[in-house]
Length: 249
Image 1 (spheres, rainbow, N blue to C red):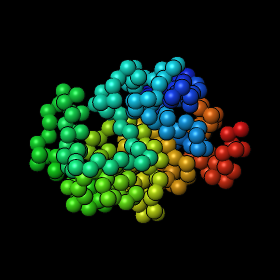
Image 2: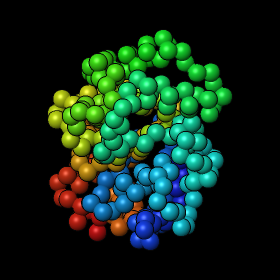
Image 3: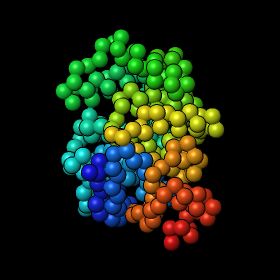
Image 4: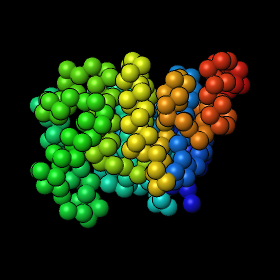
């Protein structure tokens, strides 16, 4: 059974159509990479799946574990196990990482009918995830992403993902702004948290380099609002050699 099934998805923002009949199926245990030129609709796809306001679906359907994903509010999608990682993680002044992450996790647990974690239980989990991602534990006490470098923001986002432990992760250009060491650390984090038979990943990226660490089962080329070509990991290497113009034609 497909964990995620997208059929003929059309979506627009401010009246401009961005997704123009996109279809995609993702099964549990799979990692799918979405590649494509700027303006193709990659981030729009992530925002539509995550439920960001202002992105209007005009046609098509999306089901997640057999449930109409588009009928769920963003917090309901999160409680169902959907995680959206941002290309540019936002800063939240005045809200500590620990406070933000504990509230996020316990809100999701409440949505699933589970008991909240105690302060001690949560801190043990948060410290373990921070250590695994090489994030200084002092950063857990700082305001969310405030004063963080690009690499620290991405590692912090992986800590968030490890704590909420989603079923399905949509990661929008997680490799953006990462140096070689940070790229390896983030790639290892994605594999550790999400490469499991009951989880799946939609990895949105411009470049092959992240796929050296997170080996995809499938690679899809998104151009002009629809998937125009799909293949295995070798397709990403072809894109690296030839660019999008020839492959997406």
